[in-house]
Length: 108
Image (cartoon, rainbow, N blue to C red):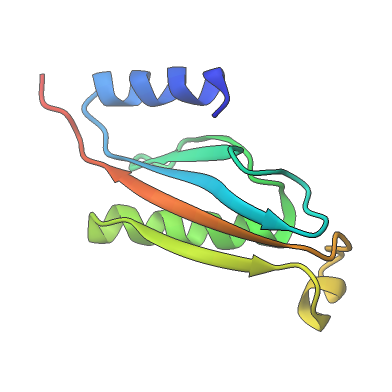
């Protein structure tokens, strides 16, 4: 995980915000980012980091929003090798599995 993402998570937690943290846990084939890449989304809508951009990142952000609403973690597999991926300009051809963890707000 990028140190910048960790630092931003710490700031949000200091402000008492819940955070969804998405991390690529596994890849196969060609993907824009590899295992360990992450992004974080705070409940106020701010975000930092990347899991690769494009349609795949949009899917991860949507799941992160759901994680914040449900207050529970989730996982998604993104395939960048089908017709929909090609139509969206995702030409990598691989697959990535992303785990989205929920960090509750911390009262100070």
